[in-house]
Image (cartoon, rainbow, N blue to C red; front, side, top):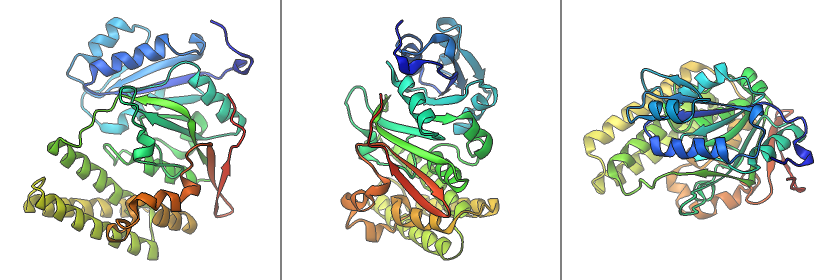
Length: 346
């Protein structure tokens, strides 16, 4: 296979995949990474952490992809499973993937060239559905203040300095927590909407049971993150915003028959307990960082205020939500600095 001049001295990469009961999707992902990635085969390894799958995922990988390293967990530990891949991976960089997400072609080369050129710690990309072409990073923008965790490149040095994913978060919102953590340490995040990852995500909005589960997990982890990182007046503001939003949302869900009044009480009790869990971590971050997330990350907004400008929220905060050119965010001298990359490299 031919590689262009930019591929000279490419770094070794660990492809760290977390799998749980998506045997069809993980088969597609591994095929894409193994057979359709234009990157020297001796310069990357593939690790799959099997989160206690029961659908034949482990058996398929052992039989069809014998060169893939598999870590088989006895129980589903959620996103903490990726940590097992971080622990044994030998790469200078980790390409972190969901079992239903992949990149292909020369995308990995683009990623590593960019992170080395601009000394990037964490690089996220545009995420689209390969079947419907829906842009997930447009329907739910995370911009520079978070990322879509299904496909992200993280340097080994970043993991050494910032640590592994927070095991208090089972699933959803770990991306937000990790972004705040790396920014608080003076590390940077680059969002690159010119580079594409594919996510074979199924639409579950019409499934009320799955909607209840995703809402509960996502919200309790938002409360946990608020408790972990906000202090003083910012803690008061963000907690009152979250409580107002929670009561409003749960009342709507009760009226629509999605949850019961009893479940509403249980949700609020659980969310507040996760806020207290976060407070016990006692992680101090920069005041400007707290202010930025309070004002510019929609999950921390008061729904009674934000509902009037939901569709323009990201335009108002466009510096943190680039749509075309990649940009890098870093905390410098206690101020957040955003650098736009105007020369798109390939």
